[in-house]
Length: 325
Image: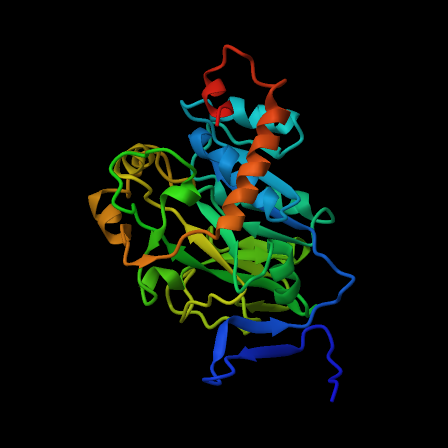
């Protein structure tokens, strides 16, 4: 018998032996003629060593528009963002000299993506949006989550990655170097980052959660999110179609550098990334590497991105170190 299914209808793929749902097995029927245009907005301060990989990864996995809030820093982040904007790889918004700017930047960037993207993610440069359950790219998963027109926003669960025991950064991409994450029941996995229809957003509660004008706020299974009393935290983590891999500490040395620059949503001088912060997030119980195909596609896109940047970064610029493999 052939079923007649409409966009938004749910199909659950079960294990033929146990009868239990397979990981990533909740599927929603999508309109075969709709491939959503997906955008990304993020603030950046002193992120020069990581920006090219982060941009390349998301471009390789189907992100079309990237808007970055340039908050400067001593590592030539502004120079790199200006070159990326000149090369047409991103849109740069100038937020240099500003503190506690993240919410204001997010709202400006979201407004700029109205009519340009169907859906955009509000994220950070240490977060990588990862398709799950064999889905090949981000728009494929987004098409499922937003298959119903009533869905206005989705909270994607965090996955906290630790240092993998690294003291020094070492060689390789972030998504290669850090392969161990917290146990499945870690409380921080319940924290979400939001992906949304930009025209339906009226504000940001915090860098994690938006206020929507109408419609539904769901998880990556399409279920209504059940919030806890803690802002930005759902009752449970959902890793079905999309999640956010959060490389929050990286190596010991990288964390020490990150801790000095403060937070984009806090006034200048506030220091909350201390030893206790590192210890609570340096969780390495589960080996869960980025799929090799995603890594390979990132490297290919990174090579193309560097090639595009050649004419926009002077040969005597300190950024030339980022132009080498």
